[in-house]
Length: 199
Image 1 (tube, helix red, strand yellow):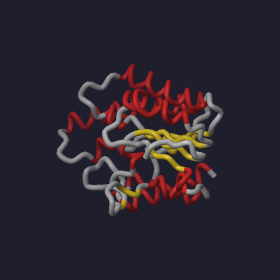
Image 2 (cartoon, one colour):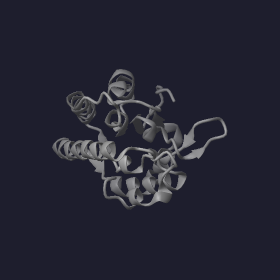
Image 3 (tube, helix red, strand yellow):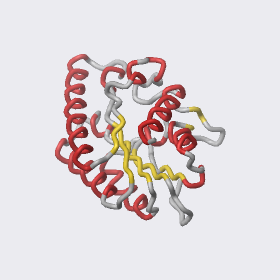
Image 4 (cartoon, one colour):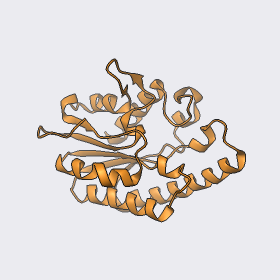
């Protein structure tokens, strides 16, 4: 969905988690993920929500292709859900990953808007067919990323939904078979928990 000149109350940027992949399939293509449910729970009209999330997006993609468009909307609430594709990449660059996240979140918070994000659940534990040595290495990478995100969000005053210990993370029924994306039920639970967090 393209950003427009109409008022935007909630702007989402990020990857397929923001996009809603794994949610209820829509007749015209795409998915109904957690974002529309969150908007309804917060009393935000659908026409005032813009979701730029795209499948496969990395933190670099958000910097290069989404951030400027998001800033042009001057939304009151920004959601940032990105990083999972960086973390599972074979050419993962920790320094670039951290720089990109800091730049994205700092830029948005400097606008004076409310900003929320998530930490990363145990995706390595859910990926099918992964060798155990690679699973352990990825879990270490994810843990280090979450430690960084915890510190960054505390520093910047960004609202963080902790998916590491959330009940939805531990329930297999809340996840799609690919291990990467929430199921339709998972998206609904995430929307409800984010609404409670955001008040």
